[in-house]
Length: 318
Image 1 (cartoon, rainbow, N blue to C red):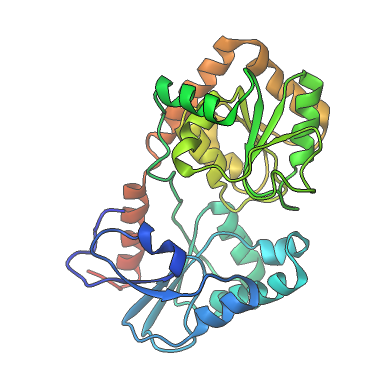
Image 2: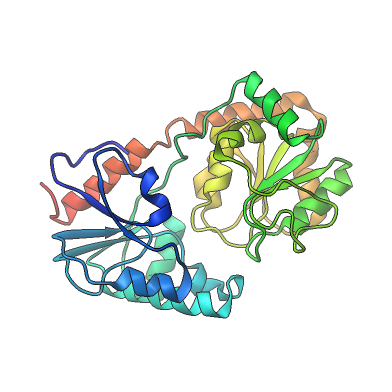
C-alpha cells in the first residue's frame, strides 16, 4: 500500500504471523496468532494512540482518541453455523462491540455496508479491497513448472480455499464429475475427511504457485454461501483465471463482467455455466481477458486513496 499519509508515524497492531506483510518503514506491535474468544481478548487490550484503525474489526477497549474499524463481513452474525460455537461466540462479541464503539466504520463492499446498517442502523463508508501484489498473470514457464510440481491433470476445475461450511466444495466436485473432468482442491482441509472423495486435494499451496495454478485450471470455481467481499475469486481473475462463482453477498458487485456467476446451488446450473469454458477454448480466453481487464483498475493504491478520503471526511487528517 502506498504511504499516502507520510510523514505521519504509523504503527500496525498485527498478529505475529503477519509482520512480514507490513509496508517497509511501518513499526509493528504484535499479538499472538489466535481467533474466536482469544482474538477478541487480545484485540481489546488497551493501546495508546491518537488514531487507531482496526483493519479487521479489532479495536482496543481504551486508549485511542479516535477509532476506525474496517468490517469485512458479518458472517458471525449472519451465518454463525459456519464456525464452531466457541469461535462464533468470541467473534460475535468482538464484531458487535466494534460496530457499536468505532467512531468511523468502513465496509469492504456495499453489501457489507448494507448489512451493517441493517444490524446496527449505522452508516459505513465503502472502501473495496484489491488483489494481493502477487496476483498477476504468470509466465508459461511458471504454469509448466506448477503443472509438473503438483502433477496436475490436463484439464480440471479448481477451487482454492479452506474446506469449511461456508464453501460448497461438494457442489464443485459434483459439477466437475458431470463434466467429466477432475476437480482439484487447494487449501486447508483439501486433503482431509471433509473434502469430497472424488476431488484431488493439494493441501497447502505456496502463494508463489497460485497465479500459475489459477492460469492452469480450465475453470476456477468459487462456490460459497456467503461473501462479504470474496478475495480468492478476485485474485484468480487478476491472474487470468476463468472464474465461475456463486452469486452471493458482495460477489456480483465485486467481479463485474470478469466472471460468470451462478444464482443457485443446483448442479445442473453450475454445469451449464462451466460447460462453455470447458468445451470452447475461445470462450475461456475471452473470459480470462475480461477478468484481467476488470481487475486492472482494482488496486491497493485505489484502496489507500479511498481510505484517506474517509479520514479527511472524518477530520482525522487534513
